Structure formats: C-alpha cells, structure tokens
Image 1 (cartoon, rainbow, N blue to C red):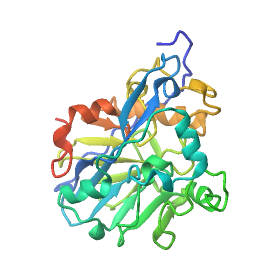
Image 2: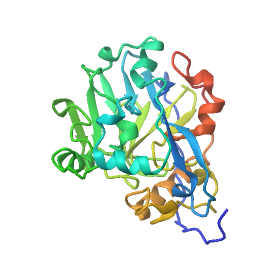
Image 3: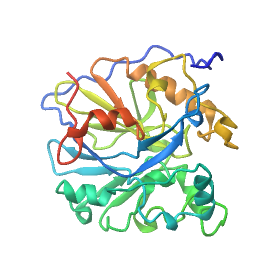
Length: 310
C-alpha cells in the first residue's frame, strides 16, 4: 500500500435497500466469458508496485424471474483487434502484452444455450474498447447507453482519426441514450437510478466518473432480499470498494499521460457510494475486470448461474 493519504469522500447515512414485495421478481444472472486483457497494477491503484496481470473482461446475462424479459450487460473484447481505432491499438501495443479472446460473448452465449439473434436488449456500461465487443450478431437487440456516451460516438473514429472510440460501437438505429431525467428514482446510496423493468427487480445506476455515460447495475438476485452490484469499470480492483485506505491511480500513473478514470473527482464519489452499498446486508458485487471473482466462480458462467448471497 501507498504511504500517501487517500482522498476522502464523506457520505451521509445510506438508506436501506427496498424490502421485497410479495412474489417479488428478481434476476437470474450468469457470467459470460468475453476476453482477457493485461493491465499494469499501478495504472489502477495508487501506490501499487507494478505488476502486469491477465484480467478478464466480464459480461453478464440477466433473465427476469417472472417473465421472458432478459438483457446482456456488455459485450467484452472483439476478437478482430485490428478493427479498433489506430490510436487505441498504438496505445495498447505500448503496454507490451497481447489481448486474448479464447471465447467471445457470442460464443459464450451459444455455449450456454442463448442465440444472440434472439437477445432483445443489450446494456453497454460504457464505450471503452473492452466492453463494446461486436454488436453485429445481436440483430434484434435495442442497445442502451448513458447519455454522456452520445458525444463520444459523434466524435468517434473514423470521423475523428485520433479518437479511441468507434463511432459504430453500437447500431445507430437501435441505440437508446438515457438522459439525466430518465434516472427517476434513488436506491441505497445512489441518487440517480432507473427501475429498468418497473418492478424493483433491477436498477440501472448513473455512475459517470469512469467515462461519460458510464452505467452500472444493481439487481435483486432472490425473492427474499439478496442483491448484487455489477460495477463495470467503476473500479478496476475490488480493494477500492472494500478498503477505504485505497485510492485510484491518478494522472501519469504507470507512465500513462492520463488517469484511467475520465473524471477522478466523480470516480471517487462513485466508489464512495459503492463502498456504502457493499456494507449493507446480503449485497455482493463484481467488477468487469475482477480476476479473483472470475477465478472463484467458475460455476457462475452460462448455463450456470450466480448463487444469491444468503
């Protein structure tokens, strides 16, 4: 750990999560393998000595317990790395480790019995390359992005030849952007949330610190009060959500010319809220690049399911 004093964000007392209704719907959730990347630890965690670890890019399949409604969260890494913008490929090449995609999201879906052509909704946490995957097999799906993502797409590659965002990251005619006013409720420590199905089973959370438009998910995973938070890139190391002495790495960390989070002040606020959330009973969490979770939960991959916290 670093000897530096971490930034502190003071939070008011967190409201409890809503109690289950009678016959409360919830979400059946499965992990999807979606590629592997290599990230230096000192880019992620302040004061961390440099090690380069293989980390997963996790996606998830959500199915509503009381209906056929479902969605996928994130599409992971493209196998065709050459299709990414040149600036992104040049930057990632300087990190010196390859990207590996032994199984992409499409293959993970098919292996688990889900045809991508039948998927109705895809939620993309944010537009970074390791989350957008290849949307072309999801021919029926409506894609949901945070409102802040639209400007990134509008200024994306190839229109802007130096952009690291692909302008066709999602199908333009089937993409919905969530505006600030769409987050009509609050839940737990989060002031801006959307009750996605309108029955308290799953909430989209506005967490824009990592990148404009970043979304995360808070889902019920049982009818009797279990919850799970799917944080995307709110943080890249689970210690940031459980250890208040930790802090995100900031500008120039690990030799980068920028912080891994687009808005470090907002990112710290997002993290502070999640720290309060995970203190609540029967709440667990997973991040998009949580290698320990991926290692310890091999049975959670489709067609398996995540086991609710008791």
